[in-house]
Structures are given as C-alpha cells and as structure tokens.
Length: 157
Image 1 (cartoon, helix red, strand yellow):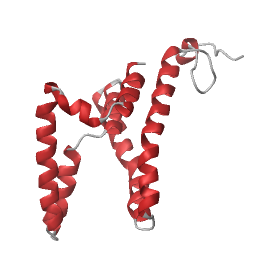
Image 2 (image 1 turned 180 degrees about the horizontal axis):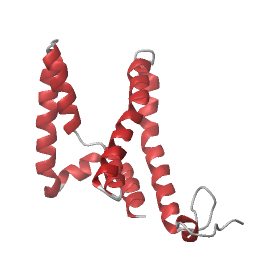
Image 3 (image 1 turned 45 degrees about the horizontal axis):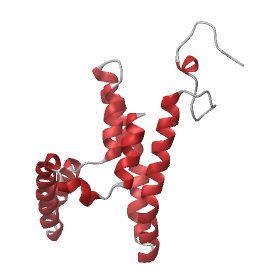
Image 4 (image 1 turned 135 degrees about the vertical axis):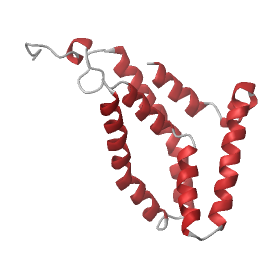
C-alpha cells in the first residue's frame, strides 16, 4: 500500500517541490553531476565514451529498477535475488530497444503527448498497488490474503 501511495504522490507533486527540501539537495547535486558527465560523454563519439554513457546511465535513479530491487530483496536467498535482477534486466532489453528505434519515427507532438500520459499511468499503477495491498478478494486485481498462501489443499471456488 505504501509503495502505491508513494507512486501517486510522486506523480502528482511537481519535481520542483521535492527539490526545495534539504533532504533531497545532496541527492540532486549527485544526480546533476552525473547528468553533466553524461552530457560531456555524448559529445564524444568514441567507444570508451559509449561505455562511460552506459555506466553513468546506470547510476541515475529509476523507479522501476528500485521496485525490482525490492522484489530481489524479497527473494529467499542471494542467488534468487541475483537471478531476479538478471531476468529483470534481460526483460527490459526488448522494450528499451523498441523505444530507441521507435523514437526516430515519432513526431515531437506525439512525444509530448506521451510525456503527459506517463504520470497518469503511474497513478494507475499506484492505485493497483494499493488495491492489491488491501486484499479485497477481487480476482486478478486484489486477491484475498488466503489465496496468496501456499496450501496443501487448494482453495478453489
């Protein structure tokens, strides 16, 4: 439930509001220095610059990666956690490739429309997380707590 509420708050509250508070200032300084280094690497057209871009990009925060990290932490041991993150990384390759190739075919107005839709989708996912956490018994949306446990005798209705 807390993750869903946090997702909705982050989607609704403008980034400038978060930047005003002192607790986030050090984080924003680090992120801005990484972004500036990233920008410098984009100006260079060498293979080592591409490596640096990939490395620096990995240091930038991404909510979905953090969500995957929480999933990996919830695994029963380290090997399963590593496998979880490895499969998450492999699973992102097709979508990330499509985004890179499709961006060349998209017009600027379409891109701006997509940018406006992203917070709405984030709020929708946050609401889904909240509903799932409430265990209301709604199939596929908010399963009852009883259906989440492994049982010797199945609970079929």
